[in-house]
Image 1 (cartoon, one colour):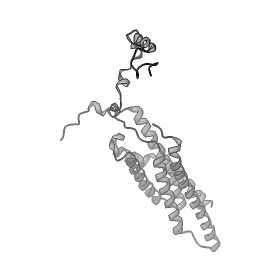
Image 2 (cartoon, rainbow over the protein chains, first blue to last red; image 1 turned 90 degrees about the horizontal axis):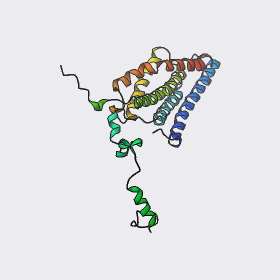
Image 3 (cartoon, rainbow over the protein chains, first blue to last red; image 1 turned 45 degrees about the vertical axis):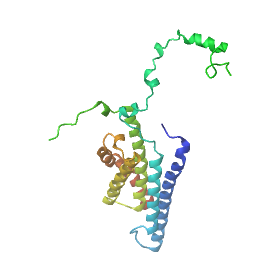
Length: 123
Length: 109
């Protein structure tokens, strides 16, 4: 069964927050490079807090997306057979006839001759 | 050499369910390839470091998908296939987004 939007929503928030954190880390890197250009130094490696921010964004998105995606279904056909009921297998619409004793039972029910619990008009 | 494993009727796969599972796996892989591509670009990784990150992250994604299935191999056609196809499957998206993010942050930023 596909997941409902309410179940997915917090994980969607988590995943997109991860992407937003990564984009913010990118903006931080751009600002850091501007600062380095002003100071006159070469870009060697990002500062440590940007690494932490990128890691946080990656982890958040990882767990968000994996929880947000649809659940897996068992792929062996035999796995689904355990859940089938008798009605699933024995339902043949063209073979269903209605010319049987149930018709008389229906009129008895309406007249109130059936015991309570089975009749429409019984108490 | 051991005899070839007999195919039993219980082993038959339902193709529509395999398709549903593959759609879910592809969605996760694409989304996370984009995320890790942005990460690689932002960090300024070039060359082999970027590919090393791709291999590590692709194994992590496959392990995460296996965890999502509850460590039960009966949800996948083959578990080694899951890990191997992840390496090549997400590579295109990863390289594309990595190049884009690197350009935005380090070349034009």
